[in-house]
Structure formats: structure tokens, C-alpha cells
Image 1 (cartoon, helix red, strand yellow):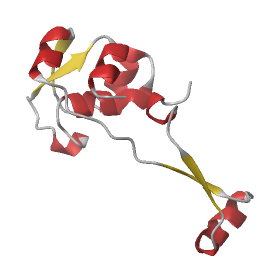
Image 2 (cartoon, helix red, strand yellow):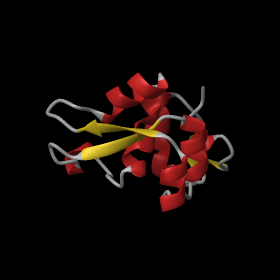
Image 3 (spheres, one colour):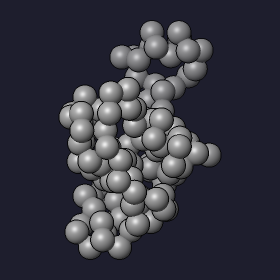
Length: 113
């Protein structure tokens, strides 16, 4: 399944000289560039409406592991990160209480994806 963030995103085929060494290395004629998706932060109403489960961040936790556990797909780690306003795992302090939205489709819709 393709990452939902990119399903409706415009793709630019880039065959500029700048990427020639990369294209040669990969054996392709062009590099695909995706437009950066525009997402919003979930509102207080979104957070109240969409059922989530609390998780206390402990040593060894990884967003991709939580995404796999709750969504069955490691690629949705960013949903948990964005939902909790943590850009990376390194930003999450030990003992922090994060919320994991249980319905992935509802969470994606709230994020504007």
C-alpha cells in the first residue's frame, strides 16, 4: 500500500544534470520529486472526537514500533509523531504521555491527508 500522504500528490520527473550521478547509480532516467504535503495540526475537537490510547514513553520505545503495533504498518510512525507534536523520537522525553489515535483513517483525515 502506498503511503497515503503521496497518493494524490503531484510528481515531477527530474532529469536535470544535477542528479546525473544519482540517476546513473540507480540506473534510471529521472528522479521522482513529490510535492511536500500540507498537513494541519489536530484541533482540540479532533483530539476529543477521535479515540486514542495513552502511552507512556519509555527507554527503547520507537515510533515505528508503535505504528506497527497499532496500525500494522511501520510507515505510519509519522501520524503518532504529528498527533503529539513531536517531530522526532529524540524530542520525546522519557515518561512523556503520548496519545496514539486508534482509527488511522480518522486521524489522517484530521491531519488533512
